[in-house]
Amino acid sequence: MMLSVWLSNLTSYSNGGKAKQISLCLPATENEISEALNKISVGTDDEYFTPDFDSPYILSLRKYLSIYDNINDLNLLAYRLDSFDADQLKTFENVLEYDGSRNIYELINTTYNISQYELLLGAATESDVATHFVEEQTYLDIPERLKRLMDYDSIGEQLCNNLVGSFTVDGYTYKNDDDIKIVYNKRNTMELIAV
Image (tube, rainbow, N blue to C red):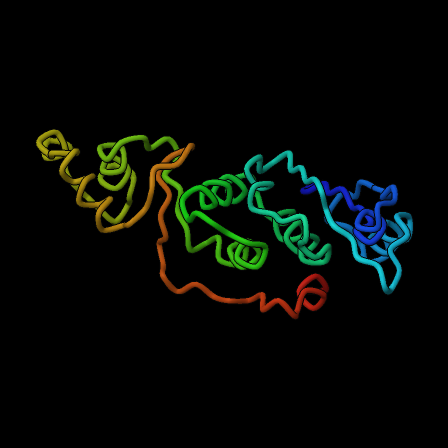
């Protein structure tokens, strides 16, 4: 389970009745979603809402989701996140913090562009960012005797200014490529789940 949502009948709730609720673990099949909506008596003329969310892997995710997000969109997001490895999940969580306000559409598209972001795990200072680039990047072959003479604070400051990233809870997060693809267009949810 990547995401757990509570579904509730909005029509019953709005009419002052006791709204039925059910918990659904995502990603789910189309049949599982239909069954859940049937259990809370959501018919063709009824609406639903999602009053609560939980994600054991991305704790901050709930603050970017709306109670009115479409269940199929939430399911697509869960499918995408379910395909991530631990490093990608950690990067995604830090991208949420770095990139700021988001909605379900931006979240889904971010999952398709996760390789466009880099997380320097554990980098807490500009000097740490410089250390990563000077000592851990294989394309730089700097002799050890010169590394000791380098001003890591100044190098880190320049790198941070050029990378336009942000210090996040787990390190330094930045875009490594500005070519962000818009894969999800708000109308192709079921197509993308089927892929």
